[in-house]
Length: 69
View 1 (tube, rainbow, N blue to C red):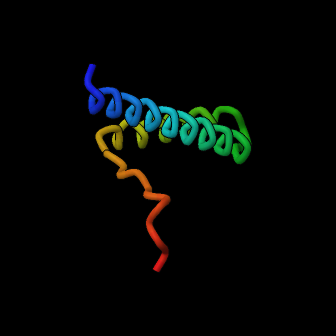
View 2 (cartoon, rainbow, N blue to C red):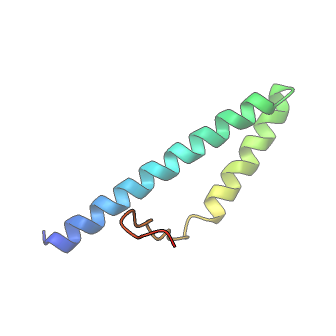
View 3 (cartoon, rainbow, N blue to C red):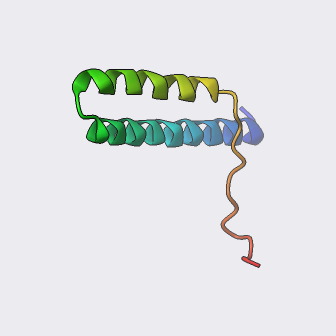
C-alpha cells in the first residue's frame, strides 16, 4: 500500500467518524426536542433521509495552519 493510499484511507475513516458523530448528536438533539415518541420516529426518519441525500458530498478539510485574515 502506497503512502497516498494510506493517507486517503485515513482521511476517509476520519470523515466517516465525523459524520457518525454529527448524526448521533443530531439524533439525540431531535429526541430531546420531541414531545412524543411517535413524533421522534418521523423526525429521525427525516433526518436519516437528509444524511443519505448528502452522502456523496465531499468535505474539504479545514487547514489549521492557514492564517486568519
